[in-house]
Amino acid sequence: LGTQGGGILQVVGSRSGQSTGQLIDKIVAALPSSKYQSVTLVSGLHGSHIGVQGGQGALYSANLIGPGTTATKVRFAVMAAIRGSVAVVFFAADPADTKDFASGIPEGSAFDYVLQEFRWPT
View 1: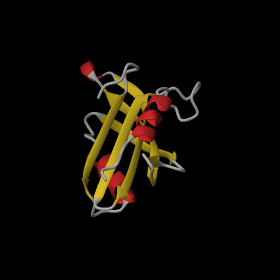
View 2: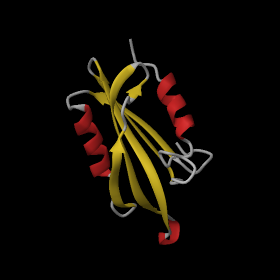
View 3: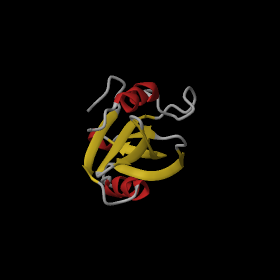
View 4: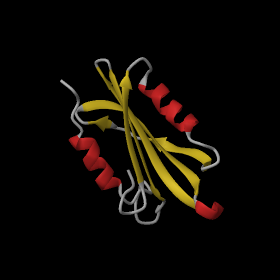
């Protein structure tokens, strides 16, 4: 999904079988290098959760190559959680703004809302 601020939001579910760390690493490794360049881990995200389920998360910086090979500095977060046999991975990216936002993600509160409201299958 595209966001009003030019960000990207993706939520993917699957059967579990890997750890949350492995799921995060898999998502980052799968980013196309033609589009995401100079990917760098910024920090872990303490207290990561998806809905009511605790998980693991990480914050990254990168250059996102757009139309006409224009590069935009972005920050993106990848969070993963497992509940029962279901794994969910959340990917959120925004044009970087490290001056006004501690995480560098201007739409962080909107992304957090999606994480808070996520409902796991029962």
